[in-house]
Image (cartoon, rainbow, N blue to C red):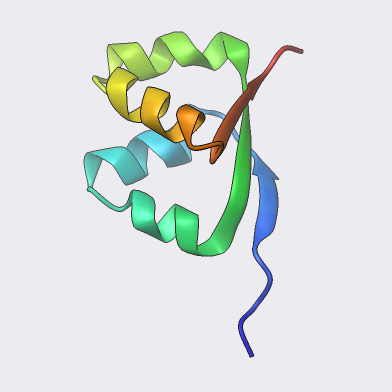
Length: 67
């Protein structure tokens, strides 16, 4: 029986690490949605993950929220 996926909130660390090693698929395997603070979006740009985070946001996998 497949395990239910979780919702998560995160800073940029785990997402950037998954991006850098090419394993976003692992996050998608375990999590349904990841919520990140809107203020963290700039950090993705600094790490060259701007396009990736845009794609994940358009898919609804990553949701930025204002705190």
